[in-house]
Length: 102
Image 1 (cartoon, rainbow, N blue to C red):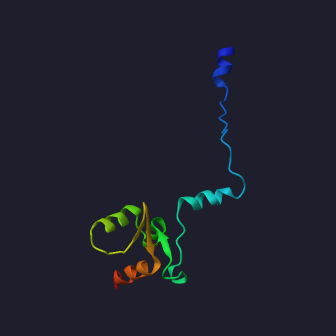
Image 2 (image 1 turned 60 degrees about the horizontal axis):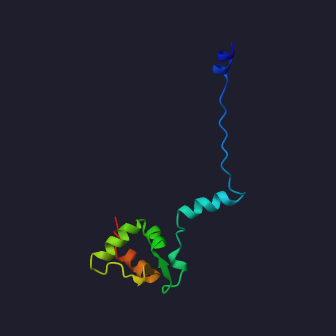
Image 3 (image 1 turned 180 degrees about the vertical axis):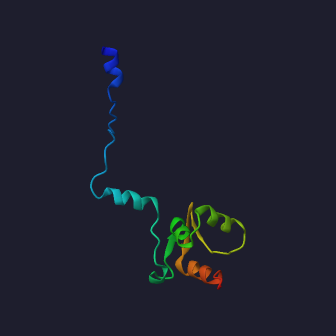
């Protein structure tokens, strides 16, 4: 009889991982995606990091690396060690030059 009772018992799985504090759920989800800035409101001389520039253009960081390595200055960049930065004005010019009207 005892073996039958053990077979019919339910197994309850409890998640013991700590939950983030209140308000941290939104911060975690925002950290995964870079915030896309409104370029029109930023000064043209301001420098954007590679991740923000990729988010503005709707591409990946690897695509920006490919554009840099082609040898043509399709999108001018600034290298500070390993960090890559793009001027807001250059990004706006790149967007306007590559805009195709339908």
